[in-house]
Length: 178
Image (cartoon, rainbow, N blue to C red; front, side, top):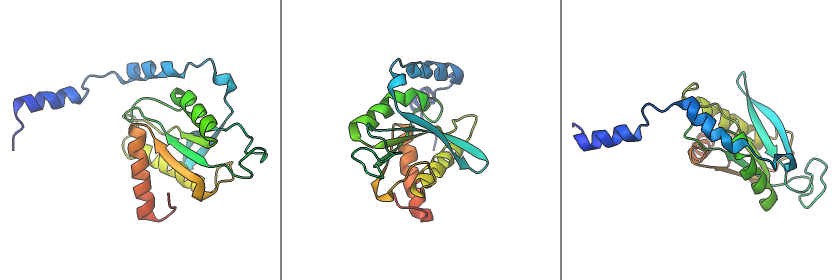
């Protein structure tokens, strides 16, 4: 069945043909400029996905999870956050303030994943980066002592799609239960 001309033009307009990826990334990176960044309690770590080390940033709530001081005791609930950006732009840096505020306002440790972006890294590379990190958190292979019953996986935009895909993969592979 042929697609009529108006629908074909609409699809072409929605395909973002001719977008300059580097320009879009530089524009998105303006959000990373944050004068309050110095006040965030963060730890940068890496989780292996095969031979690649996936960067993660851990945002701490007000209490100190590493020493057990505060209201969490030995473990705090964890939010695993996957950033948006259409799988092409955005980064952990761009979501610093969002993640820091989530940690502070919810009392959760927030783990933000710096997955590899398209088009340099084709599907399913970003998904597999995120899956490796989530699996590592569930299996206590991160620097935190985590209770799997107190983990929530969330995402913004493309990150929401990755979140749903990770949950389905975990169900199918039976490696952990989100």
